[in-house]
Length: 175
Image (cartoon, rainbow, N blue to C red; front, side, top):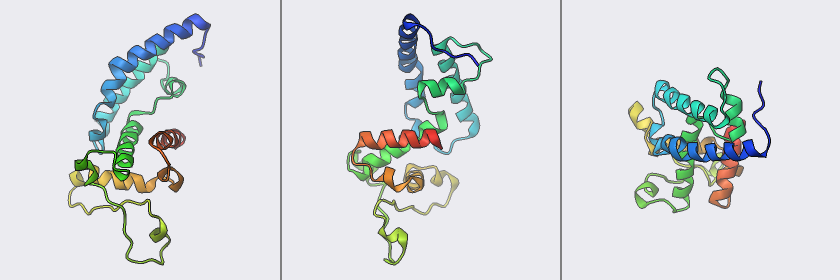
């Protein structure tokens, strides 16, 4: 495998390419990507191919080179994890009343009827609404609590948005 590090001049040019790719390609992949929750794997694969090509462009890698090590080197999450990251970031903002009211109204904390359960003491869990259709399961109101409740408690209890995002990105990279 080729290591894509070189002298300082290469790093400056690579940083310029990285900024250009972030402005022109990655920003388009990330724009409203929370709407992609539950979409078909074919749609996710199309976006993943675009992200892989963008990573290869940053490093001037060959067409046949694997993109995974390049994505790791750039600290870019795969597309499906970027969607999860966006949904969970919006959920964090909703819980802390930093999101628009129409989104805040979609999220509510879980209220346990039984106080003896271990989950009854966890005040960071979200209530999961009942949905009748698969499209209802893909909605933000259903997907955000499902993903949020799967996070480790230490991440859910982050004190600030920045700390939450750092912990979440590390968690998603390692999972």
